[in-house]
Length: 99
Image (cartoon, rainbow, N blue to C red; front, side, top):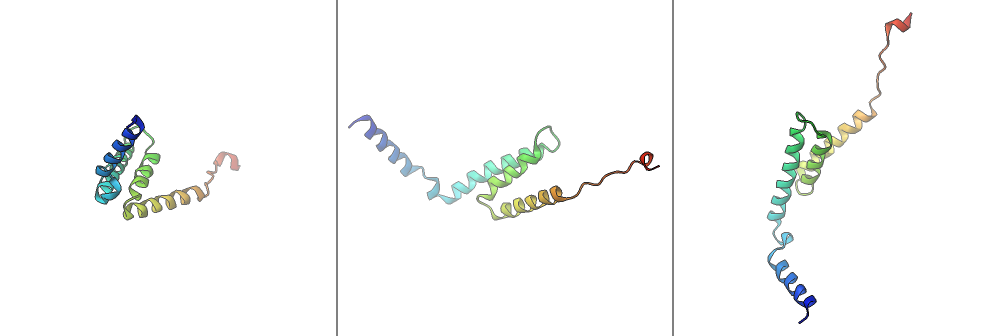
């Protein structure tokens, strides 16, 4: 048996024992832990220096791969960003220029 066949046998043996797709609760737990960690880091960045406006949606996007409530929150956040982007900017009039 050559090295390549041994490596293939080891790989198939390991994948038989460790398959995240076969255990849906394990996949959901792993995604939940990673997503909540990123989300909490983003929330902490609202008071600490850092790009919270990027990290919070990233955490929601990770959670949205497994949880419906996170999909709804992510969609709501996207709609809020679109409204802010489309909102016209008001120009402040300086009284000195008026007359």
